[in-house]
Amino acid sequence: MSVLGIDRITYGVADVPACRRFFLDWGLRLVTESDTALDFEAMNGCEVRVRHMEDATLPPAFESGPTLREVIWGVESAADLERLRSALGRDAKWSEPEATLHATDPNGLAVAFRVTRKRPVEVTGVPINAWGVPGRGINRRSTVYQRAEPIEVGHVVFFTDRLADVERFYVERVGFRVSDRYPGRAVFLRCAETGGHHDLFLLQPPAPKRGLNHVAFTVRDIHEVFGGGMHISRCGWETEIGPGRHPISSAYFWYVKNPAGALAEYYSDEDQLDGNWEPQEFQQSPEAFAEWAVIGGIDGKSRRARSAP
Image (cartoon, rainbow, N blue to C red):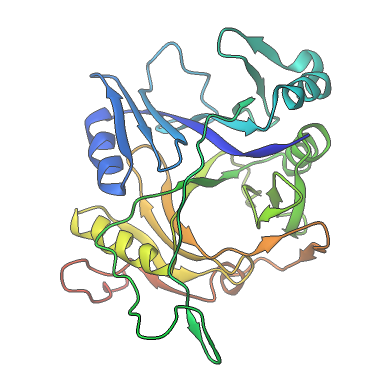
């Protein structure tokens, strides 16, 4: 079966106006709005929905407070949906006319599957002039981004107290692949054999916990990570950590506190894997999380690192 990636996420929030400001500053396009509901989309049509947390149409929350209430994964074809209907069996429900298969994962999160509604986009990041390989070319400056425009929701990260059960659900029933893991503590999963390092990361902390860690938005290149982070700082939103670089996926990152729940991340330049990749095991540590990182971010006006708390 062919799961292509995240097609739509839905937040349940306490402060709809604050979320409106945040996601517009973040770089998403506002499609429709009301006093209690907002519909955004990224560049390729990946949807980000915001609903007041008391909205009766929302799936049940798997933690208190603002958080993600549903993740919809896009598949390639109706045949893929039929295979998922068979794999999930009575644990899933079909809805019409949306043609969407709904279920709940062992972590208590509402998940769904539909034929993807994302659209192809022509997006090219700026190549790097590595030593001996001038990828950007001759007589060409690199791009400076004044803000970010996310291409899509690239991955989601959750805390869980049932790591093995949730991994089995996504691997054995949905068809995800293991990319890497912290034994007994966390697993990186990608939704297809060939693709980015992870679409889903599951983390089991020492103290039992379920909930959202962050939602990651893909941008073109490292320069857009910097430009987006600087812009969101100028808008007054608080950076948790970043810029920085993950040694496991190789991606550059910038994490910001999100009024819709937990953190939002800009990232780019993650490793691309195929069926020849052999998952590795790592010991969880600050060094495994970040090769380097700026605590609290960079101030968008002074363009200097903020003081560590």
